[in-house]
Length: 320
Length: 190
Image (tube, rainbow over all chains, first blue to last red; front, side, top):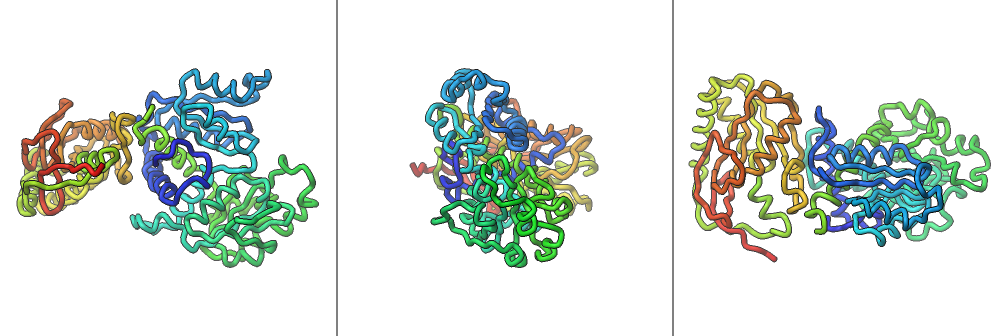
């Protein structure tokens, strides 16, 4: 991959997505070793700039960097000089002056990773910007679906790249979801048919140009779905009361035990986490064998290793 | 496969143009058979012995070696595949890319490991392989089998089993396939 930054799925060509997913196989193998570590990025420093709270993404990137033997620096707003009023640019330039090789950034405002990419020389990886994009989440979700649907012993490289013809249903708070945006782009680029299911108030006001179908009837789409992708109700982002009540939402849009009976036998249930058990997903549904939520988390580390390796290791490195 | 990998990866991208055929399919078969006998003799049998091919050029040779070993001794020898890309010492200097995942589904502790590759050149791939093997346990011994030793070592590494010693110039290239061994050059495409 010749790209310097990973900012959005929208930037990536199909063969670039494919290369990342193919490479992830090698890092899944590393993660399964008795000693899950390789010396590949020794001496490189990866800094995580998280201006918004996160458990799994921050720890996942940190684990990925450490398994590649890179050094990691962590930054979170609550313990930093941002509290003293330092500007974003000054914060970023201060950290760059310490010598860094890659920046992983999450921010509540869309576009911040692009801005940072203009200020620093190091590669920038978007770990979520506002409601906009979360590219590594989409990559790990594509990888997870592909990994499960691959023939057990098949090393059928040509077919691996595609989610051709798979029917993926994305349910819930699409409006506030960067995960939904990145995943719609990635799933459709790999050939899947995506249907969004949500109450009208939780859909973006304008869906022109989105390559998706829209439904408001979850029960009608479940029988044909190959994957049900549930989104978290982002109550912290919802300023007005959409939907009118959580109970109403649960009645119409939550994946309950009864609704899972509508699914075909090999349909998968996915969730990017953190889950609101009892809201978008019933507590016991999350623990069904068809729920691959912990698999998504495990693959997340491997996908991020592949991304860090491509940004820092494969291209010929520093200054190349 | 150090050779082909190096030649195919940008910015070295190019096509291999063969000049001389050095070994044919029969020569290859006889060399594998001889190496197999040497392995059996050297290890006094095949007990606790594992064959590991280096991705990707060493893998078919490792499989053939294991087949011949089974014919000679009547015992199955486990075959692993090792990709050394993540352990190379030239990451950041030249483009490095994993070729195919490692597959070593057994503990190497206490085993005799025969590493198999197609061409031994600078020795850096083997150094990376020795480093990588550490992550799978502590082998009793590690031996090295190569089809072609073309010289130009940059590290103190020597093979235990050699198909053919082939003097080369540094800028030449050796290609090993199921059809045999060819010596030639890489024509730059850019």
